[in-house]
Length: 384
Image (tube, rainbow, N blue to C red; front, top):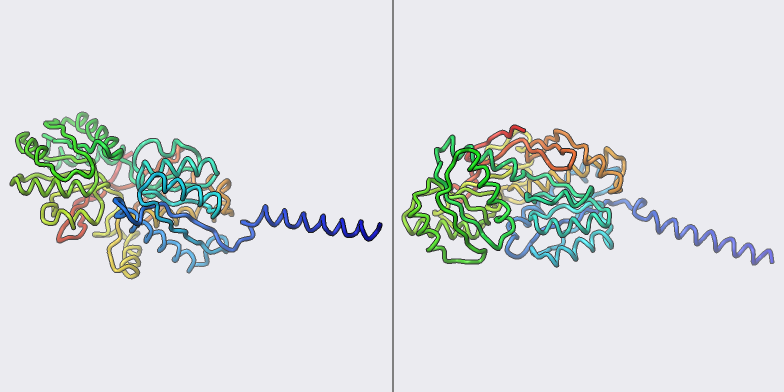
């Protein structure tokens, strides 16, 4: 009997040990996993490819400096192809199988919302390095972003258009099947109205269309001083090409949806110093804070960083800081430190979080294309 009791006791101890090990496996791991959200192929890969590079650079630099809480950061880089079903599957995999501490991305608002709901349900932090539209952080207290928001940037840009450039008669073109565009247009229209501008033409297109003859003909007859286009870089390049064909001399203004390397490839001379967009970063004439990042990025990848690479880089650095400050890589714990972020001197400007976890960025950067490369037009501080 004593032998049987002893054996039973040993079995109980072994079972308890196994259960404890199973429950605390992540705590005993010597790595902290971060899941990348972005497209590496497909129509919005121009955003995801540089974003992945910025994330990789930040992880490498942190690991070279000893990691986070004595552990190495590991990035997992699945390709969501810019597809809502793909990102749902990837976010679920990151949360339930890979057991990531946080997801970094997506650059697109609609895709971010899909992943954010999954992150919130599974109590995993999601930190977007690009989503600018509304209704993102409202999904829950595990959802953050560190990008320049349209609601703060657009009034600054419209003020620059009207009061510095004298462009008071404004045409607006919206892409109707693009959620980014349909959300951004009302923000521009409201700012134009409040600042005394006049909308002389409102037209629409759809993404993937290639013939914009009708819209440009109306634009020419409207005698606008400037065109606001709220869509993406592909259609902007095609619109400007048609504008050039029609012999019309006009600038196109837009948001960071125009920030894709294919803008210059597709538009060529038609977009050079004619397309101007706002964003939260510029590698041209970098600040002292961003100069080191720009140099390291160029050395590693032999190309200029863009807004998405900068904001993903900052996102990883901020996440690492929150984990260190919380002395924990548990999302339930470090999300509270993340929410306290104030005046963080990142490469994409100074970042603070409001009580609702919305980011306050310090500067609007106006960029254009010059000699096939990104060039800084103006740097404008934001007053909150």
